[in-house]
Length: 214
Image 1 (cartoon, rainbow, N blue to C red):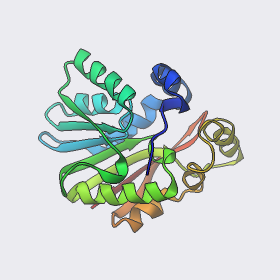
Image 2: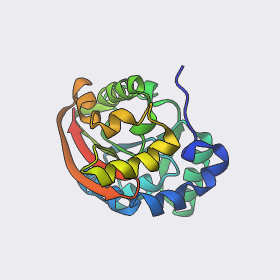
Image 3: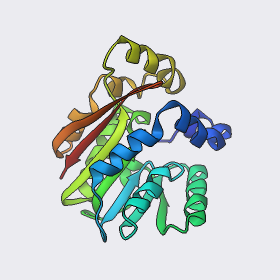
Image 4: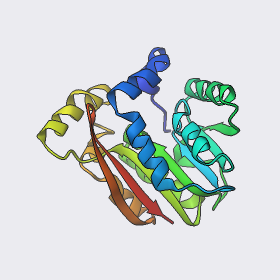
């Protein structure tokens, strides 16, 4: 059975997740890229997959206050933080707990699925199952926008990801991401128009923004 790994690898470190990610991954830049690529519209149903503490969901709410936003994560601790942040911001965002390999939503439920720094935590088998689930819950014409580890542009970025993210998370789940295999997995799941639209150099390696649609 699939299990989840807590933010930063250990539950005791979850409270440090937001400041650490903000500092080491150029979070503001790549999440802005996701929001720009999503082009969210009023009334759309939007899923933030692997939402963590809700940072991206709150950015999506700011960009499209009339969209219907749902955050989804397996970790109850980060979801509690996400709900607290949304409450303080008076943002109407729903947050659900579960596994990405078996999303608790009907077929064609969402106009857009967003995801940041999530897929590289999954085994390759779970990456494929999750991609299939994303394709299932997207409406025809719906789009997926992912920002996650990608193929390093050069040796410096390869070293950066090896001594940071891969040191923390291991290579079992991250190797395929660093080898640039995620776009192919999305295509194999039935998504079309899979395109890398942005590549960002960060202290933790290359982060790619990938778009696709059903």
